[in-house]
Image 1 (tube, rainbow, N blue to C red):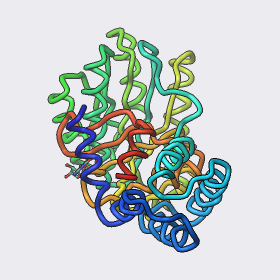
Image 2 (spheres, protein in one colour):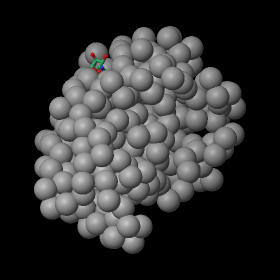
Image 3 (cartoon, helix red, strand yellow):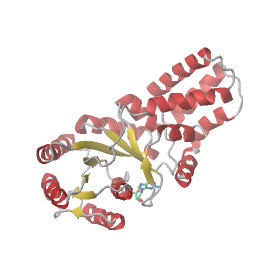
Length: 299
Ligand code: GDP
């Protein structure tokens, strides 16, 4: 656990996040200059304008109400404020519940890796995951996923390149039922250049899940590369329109990511971050902890 938090903190202490941490490290007087610097630091940390404005407004209110004078005193208020913005309305995947997770995202964001890590994570939790290789568009996708299935020691269902993704899901559900499993992780092709196809493909998969597993919760999680900052936010907006997202997996927070996009997606899109990735190893993924994340952002 400590290792995970250190990686997260190490990543977020780069440029944007580092500025934020710096602002709250000392005991600077809270005045107009402080708020200007804070706004700049939030923008540089990829929080985005609308969310930064909201945060500043709320912090000003708290500072007034609690008679706070220095940045050191304001730090805890800021942690609570950021935690409040990022906290999801409901928790994710109650233990032992059944679920289908459709995983979407553009190539290179860390989708395959995240599915492998998720399979491992849930297996460690005593769940019984199955992978479905429904990204039949890329020849290498199923093969990469198979390698992760091996690492996580979970079964996988795939068909040949160019197969109908919905047919893969159908096959996978049959296997899921036959083997008495309880978590189906579906890798999907993230081709955003054709939103209409993407939408049609995802809704077809969802329809099959609803028909074959009517009692089972189906989530659509978008994988975003946190390093890409505001571009990640734009991707989330586009996917949100096409795919009806229910959550975000934020990867590469160990790199040069500034992390503020976690606040932006929650505030601007209403979609909570569910998992964060901090490396390429199988253990480098954990459920999102809003308070730990806020503390890491603030140093
Ligand atoms: P996909 O094309 O979206 O399926 O992306 P991959 O899963 O193949 O990952 C693309 C690259 O990002 C690979 O080199 C991964 O090792 C790397 N990667 C994925 N997640 C993380 C992460 O959390 N941190 C770091 N540093 N690298 C990651």
